[in-house]
Length: 150
Image 1 (cartoon, rainbow, N blue to C red):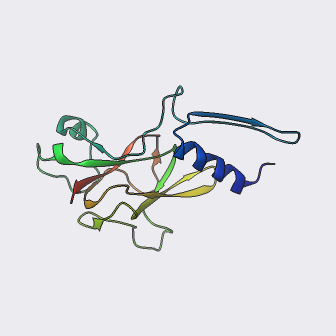
Image 2 (image 1 turned 30 degrees about the vertical axis):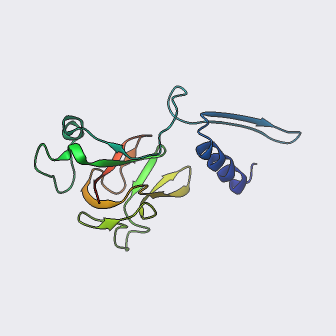
């Protein structure tokens, strides 16, 4: 069985080097890791979301006036998993609408294969919309938050 710490380090190296596939084999272990769907590279940088696209995504919290979302950045899920807005059910959410964030702010956790992964904002500004409810399944690249840049 592969050590989870080794697996996390391999995933970190894939992200840092923008790799979509990784195959490693030694005398004892074989590891094959793929990111994205169909080999599509994963984008970690927040993206500006056009107003029409953001409106089509739907909302679960505090909607902004129509047409004002074109200047928003989206924080996307880096993986398939389960979205959690707080560290545990009794804790306050990491962020809520109106909170000021920086690129290092942890905005949520995504659980995949029993591993909880912190998701950082990677942009600065104000949380404008939360697009996912805690406990919902999320897909790779799915928008989780809209952020009004600082």
